Amino acid sequence: MNLSRARLLPVLGAALLLIIQPMRGHTMNDDIAAQVDTAFTAAREGHYELISQLGEQGAKVIPYLRPYLQDTSEMVRLQAVALLTASTDARAVPLLEIALTDASQDIRARAALGLYERHDPVQLATRPELGEALRASVNQGNDAAAAILLLSYFPGKATQTTLTALRERAADGQTELAAWTPVVPVRLVIEVSQSRLGDAEARLALLKTSASGTLAELEFLLSVLREIDAPELLHALAQSLNDTREISSGLPSGAEPKRRLCDLAVVALVQRLDLPVKFALSESRRFTPAEIASVRRAMVDTLPR
Image 1 (tube, rainbow, N blue to C red):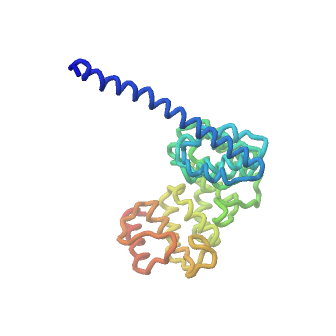
Image 2 (cartoon, rainbow, N blue to C red):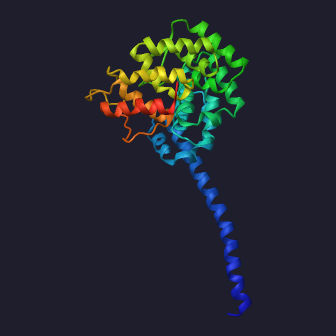
């Protein structure tokens, strides 16, 4: 083989590889699109096994879900949202935004929870169109806690108007963050959102709840500590470190011993304030008196009154 031919072969090989790789990617994308179509066709007939298998594809299915969010079948739309809420991929956000104004309250609530749990709210706040969708969703009747809490990342008159109207409309209504969390008054969730937006009256109401609220209300506030930024509120909720009443979250039904409010407070405060502690956090175990005392000390050092 002459020298010029030997030099040419690697160049030809690289060029051929560049041609083949896009073809392979195109074939793979076609295959995923076909899998999505087949799975949703089966779902329309009441068979959901293939939908479950789509979940194993991860974020690769996201670009193909948009048409199913506008399907005439509520169950099909629900399955599409379920796939989206399982992902932390940013491409899911504009699709969940569509689902926020679905005709079904169940779908609207699931979309809001997916956004709340799976995505950084600071990043979500860079999307003004998401704020518009959240306000439209709440005005449409979506009183899910996740939707109300996310509104606090979109300050402005329009958001305040939406929260005020919801408070008047909700009256004594109740809501929840998720099916496994305590049911609380819609009013309480609105106060968390308004307090984060700087409303002094809402903050005062939360201070009162922190001092004398029900077990469910205190559990809720600790569960959404990310949305509470006022130091006086954080110190008030730190009193839950003394509360040994049992709560239902954190363990499977029937498991013993149950977690206590003070155990939830330990995890919530350490994570929220990045407190320096020398023990491992756990969502299921009870903490020792010494461990709880160390959190109290860290609170004083980290967040002076």
